[in-house]
Length: 461
Ligand SMILES: Cc1cc2nc3c(=O)[nH]c(=O)nc-3n(C[C@H](O)[C@H](O)[C@H](O)COP(=O)(O)OP(=O)(O)OC[C@H]3O[C@@H](n4cnc5c(N)ncnc54)[C@H](O)[C@@H]3O)c2cc1C
Image 1: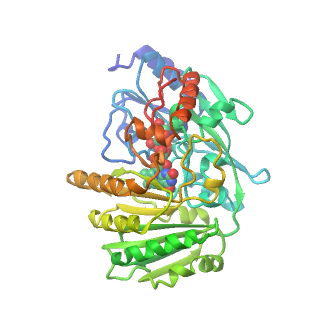
Image 2: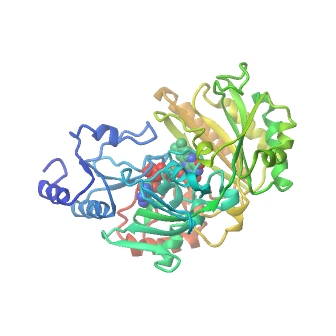
């Protein structure tokens, strides 16, 4: 035995395993066990870096046989660090990052360990897109299974809305493909139900043509926050086009060319606008915001993949975050949002954001586990800092913003951006008790012993 690892079982696993198996003495083990959130410091008994679906099958069976806790890691971006376990088996899908684009059929086959950037870059030569996250480094798997919101969601829906099929390794080590035709109830559950039902090894996504995309950045001093947020709200309430996504972000302004020197490294307010179209169309849609006279501005047509990676932060931060979905944004909520930004740690890589929701997200409502689609606004504090002594203050700021927004927020929230915030919140985020029970029934069929439990967990019903 090597700790909990039985030598014979290990030899058995190694025989037909194409990827890399790592025990704690492996030279790459310490690098491999890292996830995005540097508050997380867990040591798996074994890491199975899988090269393909058959490796995942072998790894799941190995974990089952030895009774190990199983963590499934793709992009490693979850706040809670659910991609890594202490003392158990970490199934790492990062080597499985192939993306195959069929431009004629307008579909992409995406392996389970790919990042949102892998997909955007593979589609770029064809001027095709599907909804990805606002950072290129987020894993497609965790992102999509939890809903998948990004700059393109108002136009093309959430990532899960663009799913055509998912190949999954289930808790008995079997392989299933879920789509509208096969395992339809499982397919339904994969629209927001997270990693509860198995290890997703391949996704097929619908693609859309996007001939042009524009990024516009407008920077303001922080005291202009309420005026800017209200103007953004009014713009969307008056009926902004689906092509437009706007995030209003309090952050520490970076030393970029468009940022005036007096705001660099200071708390500032950034309007980060994305337009699924040309610069001239974007300028027209954003005219009411340019009229406010920002301290600095830039606007440019860029590829979707370049826009998506524009804010990629360096890894290496301690990370805590949460989210609220708001049906409306009354003046009082705007004031409270802006006041709370003053509690952010500056300078740091933290951000406090209000983003437009709605558009195609709401229109593709259906009866999915990805609920709260009729919200108008997503509010999310994204706390990042380097010093452990800032943990308490940073977490307190995130929680305080949640309390500030609670009177205006929907019951459930968007699970991708939160850690475990309790069973009540999880159930509300899956759309309430009835939908949770339906998910629990799917869980009972595909993972009756809850071996995939490191997630916003659904208890087998
Ligand atoms: C910098 C950053 C930017 C972000 N931007 C956005 C954004 O724009 N929009 C948005 O919606 N969210 C965003 N998020 C949140 C992100 O979508 C979620 O944290 C998501 O769960 C991350 O997926 P992952 O694969 O990267 O993470 P992981 O930590 O690897 O996985 C997250 C969860 O999914 C499970 N999982 C991972 N891979 C698989 C798989 N192959 N099969 C089954 N289950 C699996 C894990 O077990 C875990 O429970 C961001 C997070 C960060 C840190």
